[in-house]
Image 1 (cartoon, one colour):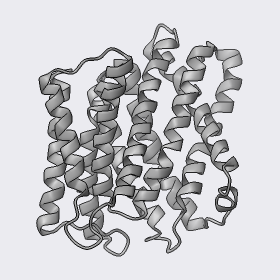
Image 2 (spheres, rainbow, N blue to C red):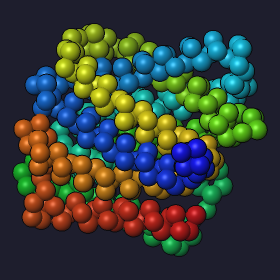
Image 3 (tube, one colour):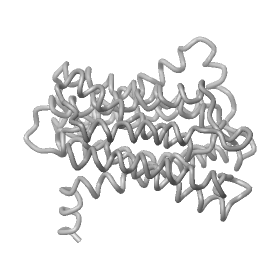
Length: 322
């Protein structure tokens, strides 16, 4: 068992695949929660994003206290600022994503989201970190964009995403991509000799950013009343049932970034998440049609499969040519 654990913790590809599966499960559960199909009373996107960030304080404060004795957090101002900014951007970017998920199928939304995260990561690293794209990589980026566009196209009435929802999804994916790039930079600034120390220190500052984003949500004009609204026991249970795989998947992805020091390479695997979303959406639609409904027949099914395949192909080319 120890040998398998050590092998798993060193193999970043396996970690990313598992993280994306858990992230896909979290996305489908989020769709169920914000749509209110299970509880008959949806959680509004604002409080959902708020509480997603608020519980970062559960990790952040105890970690700061333990650091007095264990000294596992880098107190460098630069690494702290970048980590907090990354966490803040991450949580703020969830708000538009949850809003779009209340209105559209998870498979369509996540295809655009996945393509945007990968594409925007390359834009940021190309512009500010000196990474350059070759001909094949540019072709791969084009596949990502076309896959996202195809997923958003309308087949039936109310079946596609409007320009506003596409824009919000792109905004969310761009924010997540930027947050992950900053996180990779933060890991490189921690200054410890081992990967796990750099990861843990960077993750602590990241959770501080989570809580800061929650404070911003709460102080934002018009949001306090919505956030203070009654959520209900069932929605709380659903919330934490989504946060368990979501948090674990996020930790795996962030740990993989600490191993590779490349958000670009890790984000390139986001396309795998889209395949998992499509599979999980089909499973939920088949076994729980009253709770989750996904259009998976005829032309629409093939449109989603082709869109996911284009995104995955683009990501595969990026991996092979990174």
